[in-house]
Image (cartoon, rainbow over all chains, first blue to last red; front, side):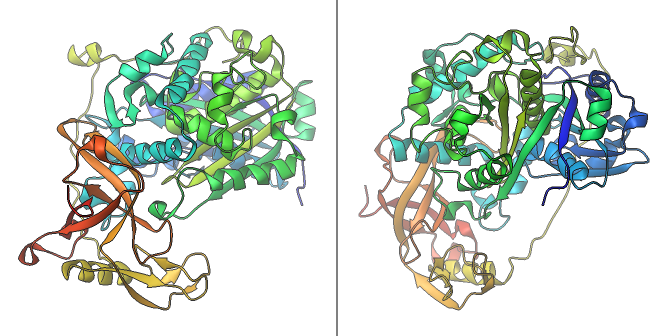
Length: 388
Length: 171
């Protein structure tokens, strides 16, 4: 069914910050330039471009795929924007993968960009428009409400404490201290999380990632092209995505079945039967700390309700038996939505190339890794598996 | 980041920079106005709410009774088969306590938000609503609740015709 192998041969990213001087185009350009440089390529070598960016409402710029084209190298090329809410960051290289795997193109530059800072006073208000205009918005719904509803349901289903969940925030913010692009890396304790401001209980301030500006990019190529440019390609060996019903109040929220379906699609392609054993580490989507646990279970990296125990036992630490979010994740590096998912794919690339420096899992080069993102109305999973 | 790269691009603009007008910024306030039709299924649902009733929709393909109602079943991908009057009682599936408004500004008095599984609909068929007449610390998952309706003359055919759900049997 799949025609050709697809390699990643370069990755790049900007700093992630609450607000950047650079426009979205300029951020896209900087990340793209770095990815091309790492690949040893120029824009002339690129045939197609896939841009990922989340709601237009953040920027107040409609048609962002077209707006960003200048900085993402898409001018005069087969340019596409993909969008599945927060899942976009990992869906962007999935889009690039199908461009190359299909045989349509030998090269594809994939760029994730987000500039959340323009919307004042806070980008949170843009999320209001994702809810049903008749049955939900009149209640004053916010995105934070529904995360808190999901977190509470997860805690209830498996008897998970807020302290257990806080361990994820502590770990990821600590991991991010070794990431030079990180926005909110810090050394904090479980007590700090517990004592932080209640936003929508059980979500507290340190349970949640910040709004950010930033961009990240990667160069995807066919096997023939990869051999010309590098001795050290990283292969995308599995991709998966899945979207569930938007009637989110009609679903059991304690388990992300759509993430499992996306993971199973990727694992089948990558011939992974036991992901916990066959993968070395994972970059799991963590816009909130409980989401890392929720997603580990959906990705079949832990049994249902088991992720908090693995976290408590240190399994998911960077030097643990199965590191999760060695980059520092969204909780530590920051959450410019589409760029954040793309950052995870870049991290897997750097880990598999042995270029992650102090973040290298268990201090050595990894052989196989996974990146996952999640989005829409608690409804979408996107997964990519890679090997060196 | 790659260990091969020593400098990462990007220039941070801090809160102080903005206060000090260190950078030029262009401001704009959108004034967009919309009027949404309710649609076929939700329109009937709203008419029911105005009459103090919650209506669901039945699919004979999968046997589910769905709320919010829809004219087609997204799983069977066929038309749904009929209207079912549900009860105005239910069960709290999950809840949270909101200290912020939609724009992340802070509230003085928190509100309790919940998914309520409606009696008469299929298991896990819940709707988003608010809880009231209960202290946040007394709310439990699985708690039985009942809709508190606006006065008949104040109802407009909207989800807010239900003021909130309160513990069944009162406080």
